[in-house]
Image 1 (cartoon, rainbow, N blue to C red):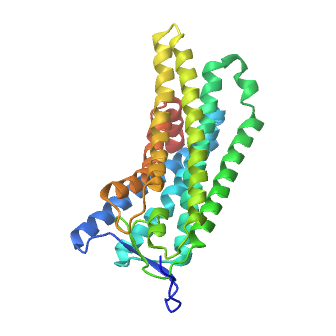
Image 2 (cartoon, rainbow, N blue to C red):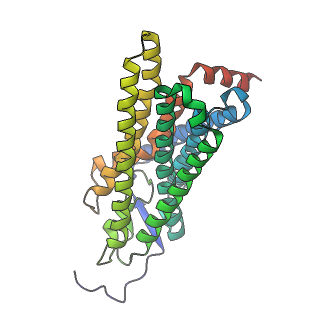
Image 3 (cartoon, one colour):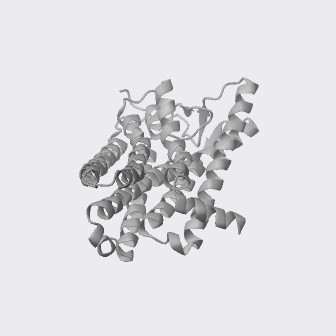
Length: 311
């Protein structure tokens, strides 16, 4: 690679290219994203309030769920409001500071969610495989410690990625090809960097991938043990209840693991449709699906929500 010219202007903002110049498409994008964000915002806030106010829901599972929904709020609020604002104002720029904040909060929220899902998997394992010792295993101190580790781990990984990404030089093109003015994505930032050595960010990506795979392996091993135990339950109703509780958990994990494929694929200045869909999948999937998977299918939660809404 030739040496970087010294007369290039240092990038102070990025251009998020993606939305068509067609006015109807941009209006459709504005309405669709606003609807998705409003529904996700209301659902997650309402469930957080319910699990906080209802004493019957002060259990380890709902303690983790409440933290998971707070992570959902962070995850979806990092990208969609800016995307809506850009579409509404017909602007497609984002400042360097705004891009840094997006990268940090996006990685922080997604990583914390994965750690919380791993903690919830441990809770499921303790409840089903060791029911007699469940209260001893999942004491309040244990729940608080697992949650604190999840948030702290997410912040450290996010800091590592943010420092690694923005310690690179961006002195050439500042155009990030994304879908619907969406967000600053690390693979696309790497694609437009003019640094000769990308190891400052490639190393954090590899570290994150290894940690994510470790979480995934732990989740799979836990669920193998869980399903082995469930098969021994004599009651068909009991088996069905256990499967309905655990299987959706794997669906949410798959949402977040799509970012591994996004980061491991070779970077390209112009992403493919699959790259763009993956970005939407792991940023918008969990916040919109978690309320349905973990709460709205649960009778205790539905009754508590009715009491909260109706007073």
